[in-house]
Amino acid sequence: MLAGSIIGGAGEELLAGFPAGDSFALANAIGALLEAPITIEDRDSQVLAFSGRQDEADRTRIQTVLGRAVPQHARHAQERAGVFKRLYASDKPIFVDTPLIEGVAGLPRVATAVRAGDQVLGSIWVAVPGPLGPEKEHMLVDAAKVVALHLLRHRVGVDVDRQVRADLVATALAEGPAAPEAIERLRLAHRPVTVMAMAVSDTAATSTPGAPTSRQLLERTADALSFHLSVVIPGSVAALVGDVCYAIVPGSAPDTDDLPEKAQSAARDFLHRASDGLTGVVLGIGRAVNSAGPADLARSRRDADRTLRALRQRPGRRVARYSEVQVDALLLDIGDLLHNEGGLLDGPIQQLRTYDQGNGTALVDTLTAWLDSLGNVLSASASLDVHPNTFRYRLRRAAEIAGMDLNDPEKRFAAMLELRTMRADSP
Image (cartoon, rainbow, N blue to C red):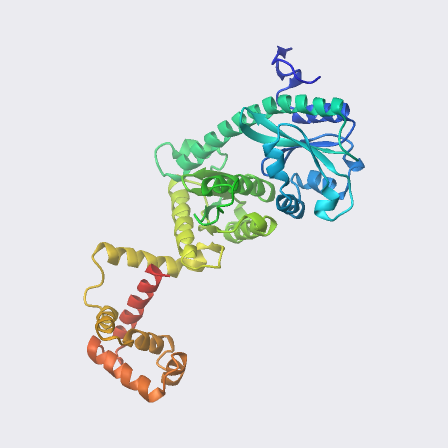
C-alpha cells in the first residue's frame, strides 16, 4: 500500500516514502499498482502529474497530458453530465463512461476525489476498460490519501512563492525606497519593460453551485496569465496586487518601441487560448520605458491602470495599449477633475439638460447630433429621424437657451468636451 507516515532520509524530505517534490514519481507508482495510466488533477482539471503509459489510453488523454489540462470540450461534457457533482459528493471512486459522455472513442475513467478533511484538493483519474475490482479500488482510495499530502505541500509552496512574488511586484511598482532592491531581485534592472494590468469584472463569476467566486476566478486567471507570459516572453513576472494582476514584461534594447505591441499580442493570445473561461477579463498595457527604474515603472503602471479604466468604459474591447486609449483616459481624468470641483459651472450642455428635464424636450440630443455630424444638418436630422426644418428650429432654440454662438469654434469645442466627459462618466 502507498499510505504511510511522513518520513525523512538521506537529507531529503519524504512524504509516505516519496520525494516531497516529485508528484510524477507518485503518479508512476499509482499507475503501476493499478496497471493503468493515471493523471493527478486539481479542481480546475489542470494536470499536476501523470504516470507513464499514457499512449495506451486515448486521444483525449494524450491531449490532456500535452496541454497539461483536460480539453475544454471534455470538461464541459463532464460538467453537463454531472460528473464533478458525483465525484466530489462520493467518498469512493466513481466510474465515468467518458466515451458515452463526450461522444468520442476511448477508454472510460475511474476517478476519485483527493481530500484533506472536508476540502477537495483535486482528483485522480484512471483510464481503464471497465470498473475497478474491490482490491484495486481500495488501492486507489489509499493512494488518494498520499496524494492529498503532496497536494497540500504543493499548495503551501505555491502560496508562499505567490506571496513573495506579489510583494516584490507591488514594491517594484510603488516607486518607494525599497523599489530598486525589488527590481533587482526580479532581475529586471536596466532592462526595457512595459507594465500590463489585468482585471476581472465582478459579474464574470456565475451563481452556479460550486462555481468559482469573482476572487477565485481572479486568482486562477492571474496564475494562468503568469504562466502564459513566462512561456511566451521569458523573464516576465506577474502577480496579483489587490484586485489587479500586474505583469512586468521585459524586452531587449532593440525592441523597446515594439514592446507594448509584443505584450498586446501575448495578451490577445492568452485570451484566445483560454477564451472559454475568461469572460469579463480586460488587459491594459502601459508605455514602454527604456530602463526599469522605479519612476519609469510607476509611470508605465499608471498608464496600464488608466488603460484598464478606459476599457471598462468600452464594453466589447478587451485588450489595448495606452497609446490607443490615451484620449479616452484624458477625458476620464478631466471628468474626475470636474467632479471634484462640483461639475462644470453653467456649461451649455448642463443648461440644456436642465431645460430638457423641465420641459420634456430633447435639445441636448439635437445639439449632440449636430456636433457629431460636424454641422451637417441633413445627416444630423436623419440620425434622429427628424425633418431637417424641424431640426434647424430645435438647433436654433438650443443655441438660444444655452447662450451659445454655434459659429464660434471655441464654443463648439467646449460643448463637445462637456459632452464627451459626460459620456465617459456614464458609458
